[in-house]
Image (cartoon, rainbow, N blue to C red; front, side, top):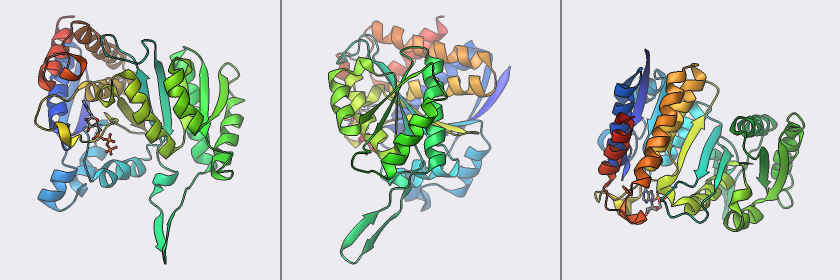
Length: 342
Ligand code: ATP
């Protein structure tokens, strides 16, 4: 049996509610499959700042460093001090955001299945902002190395998915000729290494429109940091909202899994938040552990989680947003029961 140390940040707002539901699923996986999970709670976020005066304490960083992977709930106002910092610290340059329509969820189209691959460490989110007299300036940093490695991740993913075999590079090179120009040029170069994968390019404003008009045509979208952030919130609305949107922050040696959304203060304490975002993030964690450690049990666990989500949704066990009556925790329990029942 393989054992994994999993650092767990429960986060702020609806984070603890989602985490409670997700832990039910992790426990079901642990007892059903030959996989040991040592879950270590790690303090970070708004509450941590309030209690300890720092949003991401050194001890938390050390615990995350010594774990095999990190699962994270949404963090509130201190997100930039927690997840943005962690992405840079661990060089988690690839942000995978799957956008997939699940049955029994009100989706704009039933056959949506694509992934946004967002560069995670550069661009306008690099944090290089300053003022010069009355002028505010934000520097957009795009490097050849950064473009190359994210483009390669996108093409490799298109191959692995073995679906439409298409990568769409999204940029605005007609206006941002230097920064987006480099991104587009490198994507074109990398596409030459993958003759089996179709490659096309779109301007980001056109993509925003096409996501609504014909989202079924996308397979893998690769884009820069801020464009990817904005497009993924838009895309989540196609498949039932942010509660159905998980994400993986992946580097060469480490990965952090989390919902796409923030702490959703409007839903706190109501038990109406959809836990699928974090439960599907845990599914992505098992996929990654399976690949990284060559552990087929983890890969099987990932499939079991997704199947259990589908079966639960098909039984009509959903949150009020989708016409159901289930509470956040009840959905987690129902998904866990599907795993036990296999
Ligand atoms: P950030 O600014 O940190 O990126 P965001 O833009 O994702 O956060 P959120 O507050 O997380 O903002 O999400 C926007 C809205 O989406 C929430 O106010 C809430 O109504 C809805 N939402 C977010 N997460 C969920 C969820 N898990 N289940 C149901 N609804 C959700």
